[in-house]
Structures are given as structure tokens and as C-alpha cells.
Image 1 (cartoon, rainbow, N blue to C red):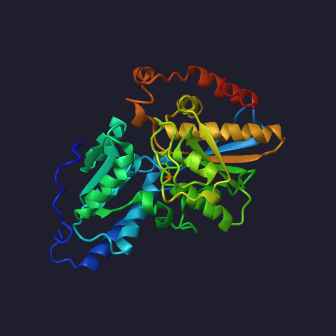
Image 2: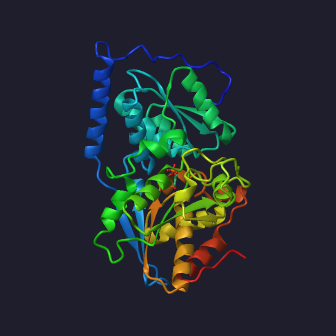
Image 3: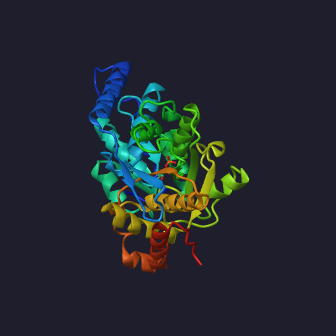
Length: 377
Ligand SMILES: Cc1ncc(COP(=O)(O)O)c(C=O)c1O
């Protein structure tokens, strides 16, 4: 781990291939085969169904992306980013790899770097949950921590200028994933719903980090000709929230958030305004409360952005119920709650940050029990 932004760039090993005697194309073919084998060894993630007493006519489904080998929805993205870099000839034998991340992507990218025998540097905000930093380091990767979360892009570009291959999740997530299928997250969800009472959901709800997940889902819904609408769940005052409401790509956040992975300080280039039909802003304290509600209902712990998703689902469900609509709502469980043991799940940490979720837990449970939305006073 390092936090010194001014030290000299690491020496590039871009052209000093570690695999002596193996030609570049052969190395790429071998790396692609390793990624294909990894995909073949992996199972699909579960689509968990929840029934809430206040919503007898609405089925809730949560896709458990925490069950990927690297614990988050970013496992899919990391595989796609390596494939994309390899097939574009941007990643060469022995070249170090870098990316900016709020942690989840870094863990997945570090895991794939180890699979491919590459050195990986994760550029992350210094405030990233300690458990995520430890997980990146446990994969043998290096963490370059920057004090200002908005500076991660610049810092990753600096490593790239020194010879590293920049996986560039914020620039490329939206195009590295095959949005027409190939078992992307949207195709997987809709396949798993096929035999359910409401196989065409009223809503799919997801958060916004790179914008890649929302782009994949939104495009696929149109491609399949479905009426399902896409709702983005975001921390209140995020740049994406302002940007989406005003159709302004220069928007910045007006409120910092403690929910990692979403709620970016700027509108990232991969975010497509047009495919998001609704955007729900969620106060951090409500997202934290929803983590606890999820644990109560699922018997497992999930991270803050999963809580944000649950709050948006309940808000949409209450609107559907008020209009007398039936149907299904699908969302994502993005990463495991254990990653936030030292932060969002730690009472002392919450107290230090002035966050008491008690009242918000009661409001969410009341919504679950009555089917009516209980807003914060
Ligand atoms: C931990 C985490 N990272 C990132 C994201 C956002 O995904 P994307 O980068 O595809 O927009 C989410 C979405 O909910 C998330 O929970």
C-alpha cells in the first residue's frame, strides 16, 4: 500500500516479456483461453425471491452478485475488461496493469491479474473500506491510495503513462460488456425469471458507478423489446443524480456519500442518461438501515449499495401498490456486508460519522409490513 502521490513512476515492464520464447499473439491466445476456462468453471449467481407482507401482489427478486469468486458484480466487469484489453492489443505479455476503483473492481481485477500472472496496481481513495484494501493486497496486488477520491482517474493515467495497461473501468465498462447477450447480467436475470409469475419485471433497479451495469441492462431491455423500466438507485446529491435530472454531464456531487461503489463525485463517461427511466435518491442513513433489513430478511449481510437498491425497490413498490398494479421488481445484491465491518457495519464508526440508522430501519420495516412508503420526517 502507498499513499505518496509524488514518488517516481514505476519502471515499465511493458516490453520485457516475462514469458521468454512465447510470442505476443501466442501469449494473448493463452491468456484468452485462461479467461474462457475461468468463465466455464464459474456458475451463475442466484436470483433470490423475497415476499413482503405489505406487497402481496408484488414479487421481489435480488440477484446475489456477492457469490462471484471475487465477491461482487465487478467479477463480470473485470473479466470483460481483461478480454477487451487483450483483444484490442492493449495488454501485452508481462505488462503491469492499473485501474482506478472504489475497491470492488480492484479486488476482481487483482484476482484476474493473478490468474494471468500480471502485476496489478489499484488506485483507490484512502477512505476505502480497510477490508477491501486487504483483499486487494491478499491477491498480491499493490494499492496506491489517494486522499481525494476525485483524483483516482488522474493517478491511474499517471501509471498508464509510465507503461501500465489501464483497464479503465470508468472509460470502458459501458462498451467492454457484450450488451446483446453472452450471459450478461440482464440476460441472466431474464432467463432466471422465465418461469416466474411475472417474468417481465415492472422495474429493474441498479446503482451507478461506472454506469456499465445500467448501460448493459438498459440496452438489453430495449434489444429484447421489453416494457421493463430501469431505475437507478443513487446516494442523495450524487453527481449522477444531478446530471440525470438536468441532463448535464458536467454535474458534480452536492453531498459526499459513505456508500462505496456508487454515488460518484462526477458524471462518469460510461453513464447513458437516456436508458435510465427513473432515478431514486437515497439518504446514506436509509441505505445503512436497509443493509440491516436485508440481513433480517435474507440471513446474510450485504454492502451499502445493496441497501440503496432495496430502498429504491420499496419506494417503487409502494407506488405500484398505490396504483393497484401487480408485477415483479428485480434488483442486485452487489457485494458482501463483511467488507464493511470496520465502517458501515461498525456502531462506533457510524456514531463518529453521525449516522444512526435506528429510525430508518423502523420506517423501512413499516413499509414492508404495510405496503405504504414511510418517508423520513
Ligand atoms: C459495490 C458497487 N460498485 C459499483 C456499482 C455500480 O456498478 P457500475 O460500475 O456497473 O455502474 C455498484 C452498483 O450497485 C456497486 O454496488
